[in-house]
Length: 110
Ligand SMILES: [Zn+2]
Image 1 (cartoon, rainbow, N blue to C red):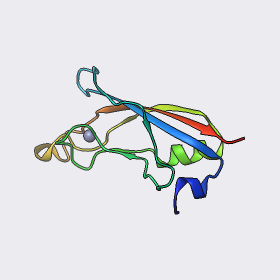
Image 2 (cartoon, protein in one colour; image 1 turned 60 degrees about the horizontal axis):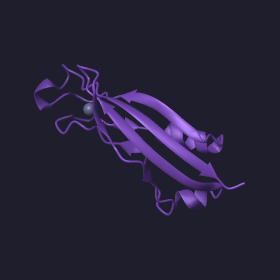
Image 3 (tube, rainbow, N blue to C red; image 1 turned 135 degrees about the vertical axis):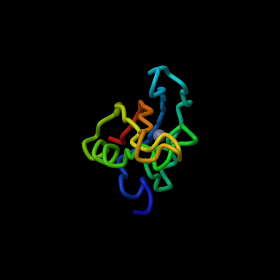
């Protein structure tokens, strides 16, 4: 595992964008700008939970991204619910449940 470019020379570009939704109200709380992923690194597709108090949360998208690249999928969208704990006082009692919607746009070299 050196870099995306070395492992997947057919990939021309990967762009990512995220939307985060509040666990209780379901409201959209944050949208990131669309970002270009640097293919010369080996990015771990682990998205941090947006809640700063969240314990052991986050979203592991590695499997879906790698599978999508192998299948040459260009638009990878989906959602993931954070399975962390809402804060230190509520470990083992209350899950974070913040929802992430992810949008990856992958271009391939023919
Ligand atoms: Zn969380």
